[in-house]
Length: 387
Image (cartoon, rainbow, N blue to C red; front, side, top):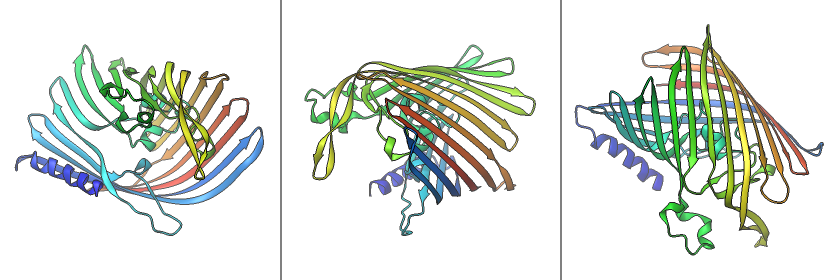
């Protein structure tokens, strides 16, 4: 019911906020994605799990954009709230595809500046600054795009400064009102207990190179994810609450003939107080987790090289982190490779049909005295229509 009400609210907002003469555009895309997956999981060089599976995914995204005049606009994205907006065919073929408001934001575009607010897209597919901040121990394979659906709630302002554009966004990383910390923190009645962060970037051209230095700093304690998302055995490792990560780095886009290269480098760290959830026995056959104070101390970096030449896109990510929280250190290293060929089967003013063979390879290692290695190979065939 909540999702249906949210969908109705989004459509009413766009239709009612626009005069009869306003330009309202509806568009979208649909995709089917068969996937073959191979997973290997080892502990101290002993095979624990080796699996192969063929899976089937699909998604539908509906977009609405309203031009309210004088630069004012409103936009919405309606889709499933599942990771990557994808739904999987279940064993019993009883899966559900519930539409919800994935993005909803509005603002104003002016000649030399703009502002917008709401549940906004991040562009994290091509900008890993949020990946390493929110997933420092497994920042590869675009986790913010996949698991957070490339959006967060915030307020953005951008303006021209010198030869480039300066953008500042107040980000709401998490709302602590329903956080489990309420159960043990009787004094948690401050609105600043929510996870706020400030993202500042400056995009400019140096010759034919586009350069974008960035800073993403938590202003209050926020929650960050931990461990790798490629296997349930690694879920939750290094997950901390109420910490204040600081991330800085840059993207550089370099044209070289018919090929465009993008190089990214980011560093993120935390050195301060926080919480960690640890297992504390079982109750009713379920593991009970309690919060323990921690002096959290970790640092992480990510390096990316991406190349695009016509229909071919390929990139390489390397992410490494050291978590010095607690009595012993934990080292993480992750490597990710993506290769894709986009074949335009049909294209017209009404839309397009594209087929994209895709290969994704991810390898992760965790060493905390016990060495855990996980590798996963995915070969996919994306068939997508835009309209």
